[in-house]
Length: 196
Image (cartoon, rainbow, N blue to C red; front, side, top):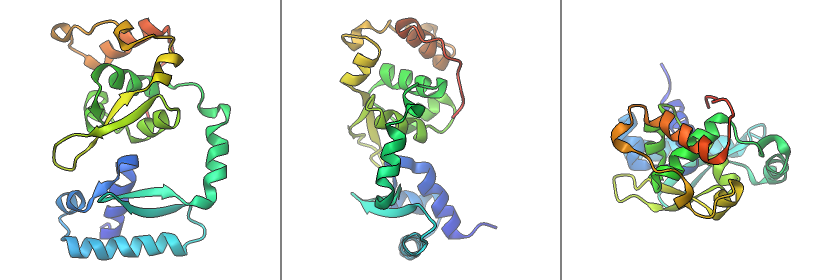
């Protein structure tokens, strides 16, 4: 059976850039908040002491997040500036199409449409400055809302979002495929879809 620390760590990982609140951790794991505080402190110390780990646990704006250690900033920046991420994968295009048509939308909203977890795709699109955070939804956990950026418009040669074809909500049986088809028509993209 997995330890409480392993459960917490998995939720921190899967929550991605949004992070997760103590309340959310407690509700999902069933662990009381005082015990969670203790486990989070131990986890933070573990990352701090482990020189072979690239991660650290941060606590900001009531949310806990796993991030890379500052000492790796140059390495991460080098990767981000390389050609490895300049092309959008099918999974990234799919995520971007959903955000473009449904904005503002939360990560969970994107996940529900895609049918898979989208944290890493959202992080990648943020790093490419194609999407950005745009406040929080007034709902439990106050999830982050995402919208496209001006760079998104430039990247796809659009003057405004009005140039995206309209979605016919009534005729959609497979919303995800309709979004991708419309987005590919607009952008001229023919990349094969990839799963995250």
